[in-house]
Length: 319
Ligand SMILES: CCCCCCCC(=O)CC(=O)SCCNC(=O)CCNC(=O)[C@H](O)C(C)(C)COP(=O)(O)OP(=O)(O)OC[C@H]1O[C@@H](n2cnc3c(N)ncnc32)[C@H](O)[C@@H]1OP(=O)(O)O
Ligand SMILES: NC(=O)C1=CN([C@@H]2O[C@H](COP(=O)(O)OP(=O)(O)OC[C@H]3O[C@@H](n4cnc5c(N)ncnc54)[C@H](O)[C@@H]3O)[C@@H](O)[C@H]2O)C=CC1
Image (cartoon, rainbow, N blue to C red; front, top):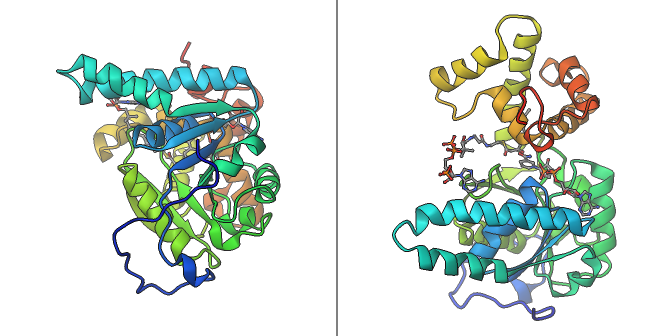
């Protein structure tokens, strides 16, 4: 991995945008080659997979070798599903593709030793502001000048996470969707301090990953979760009131509204702990808002360690 190198695109880049807080020598968006993903859970592993599949060298960071081994195993499994479709008639090319992707992927339990060679850091750890701030604050002191920081947070203000660093202009949000290899959308979030170059780099990066980016303001839930969270919570309340079984609610929303998963299936898929983090955070900030009222049932499931698919049980059982 080359250290601290960053190249710029050969094509002329349109500079008609308003430039926000960046030196004139860096008016063009940076090309991102070396990516560090922090957090090897369902989102981090998915982002790492897609980035390594699209020509980036990727280091996936988590707290233990055991977790990272599990992440890489999951990535291998997902890649096999991808090539089964993409290389349906060419199994050898499929095997070669997997080999190449895995060669572009390394793992580490020590972000500090990788940061020097990272053009972009994408954080996908637990949905907790203090933990995210702590990790970015630490890495900010060691990161090269050009390195862009991005958070995959579902619900926290990007500006609050960025405030632990001195690179407010090189900080933005990159919000991916689960499962990352399948979901085409990325929400790209600029805070008022994010430079236009950083925003353009994040937009370009999303496109290189094969995704469709949309531009979002740094407002609670951005676009998708601002609409999805109240819907999912109302489904739980409907069930708590005894107005429908969870199975019927799921069937109804799949067959009646065309959703690929019903709200309970999707909650288990996303992770009930993540949903609880989101709701608790929003409820604390806006306690009077009935849309963000927490759910007893959700709290109970999380306190019992029933976090959804990842723990084997949530609203449904998966063992
Ligand atoms: C209060 C709540 C707030 C939430 C806030 C936190 C969350 C966030 O911040 C933002 C989010 O991510 S929200 C969640 C967004 N995601 C969704 O809505 C997913 C909905 N589900 C689906 O699209 C499909 O069921 C899905 C694509 C998953 C699966 O497709 P199918 O239903 O057709 O089922 P399968 O037969 O299993 O899959 C079909 C084929 O898809 C491929 N595939 C699926 N998962 C894959 C994966 N992980 N990796 C690679 N390929 C994958 C695969 O080709 C599969 O075919 P087979 O391999 O032959 O089965
Ligand atoms: N689950 C979902 O559907 C989506 C989640 N997100 C967001 O992505 C982030 C991660 O979510 P998931 O992948 O679902 O969580 P997860 O629980 O599957 O994975 C989190 C990973 O972060 C690791 N981790 C925790 N602290 C760490 C640290 N200090 N250093 C390195 N690694 C650390 C954990 O060991 C774990 O492997 C959250 O901010 C969440 O809100 C965004 C979009 C969708």
